[in-house]
Length: 91
Image 1 (cartoon, helix red, strand yellow):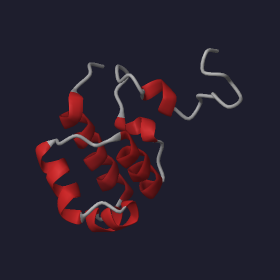
Image 2 (cartoon, rainbow, N blue to C red):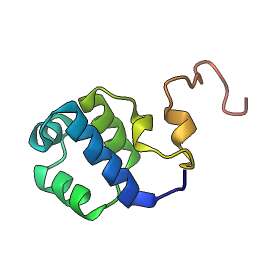
Image 3 (cartoon, helix red, strand yellow):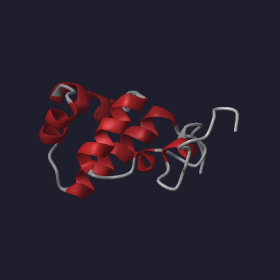
């Protein structure tokens, strides 16, 4: 899968919101992002920051890795099977 940038991430966020059956307004309130900002980012494919993606995933009850492509540099850090606990940054 290719790295499709912010637009692709926004598409995946929208799909996740739709699949969970939650409203954008509910998700915005849970995440603490203004409803108008969520709508703008989803409509225009604006960038979601890592913190926003983590909060969105938590509000939706999904893994944040669902917002990433296989080529995203942070994707391996967000997958549920990643186990970095107790490891030093150098390995």
